[in-house]
Length: 267
Image (tube, rainbow, N blue to C red):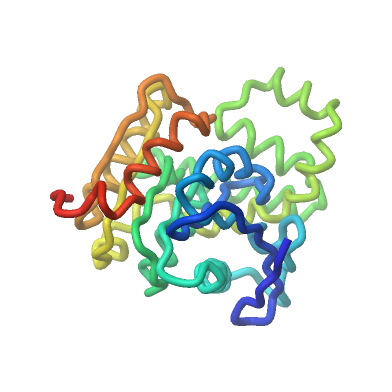
């Protein structure tokens, strides 16, 4: 992997593959650049694809001092700079929230697509987010990395019996090593509401995607997000859940990221 320095001096590791216009993939919670590799391979025949380890993960550094959303947006800006020009971006789950925050902060990107940024709008959703935030910080503060991972997994709909099996599997140690970054993803979501006013000031083309089999609250959140962003479109992928299949999203992104395919179309 190559590395680039973010604005605060943190080393960010990234991988480049393929040929064509640049595209950057931003992973979600508990992911590294390796998580995005299957999708990157499918996009590589059409684009120069960059995947990267977000701050505190894999081969990237974690900076000094407390985490801030601004620092993570600067990390993405550094990767976009390494791409060599305005690049299109795809953000998965909380990675989508990061990409949206970066663009709202003025980070230059071409087209932006996000899949199910995990906002939880509505009174009940905001209360739920507050409880999850408190529980997450309590576990991390107590050094209970496994408990933090379990809280995240159950919050995202993984059945308890599946979590129990995962705890006994070799992959669990890797998930625990990333547990501290769950607080970063949590911070990206603020109080859980869609930041309509902040995102409403952006002008780039945006494609907001959800799965047809995802929970109703998740689909509603993506519709609210698309409605808040000028020039945004919404698309539902039939048969998909939060475990998005790379071979399903790849042709959608290939069409959306291609200038020729979208030239002159109404957003």
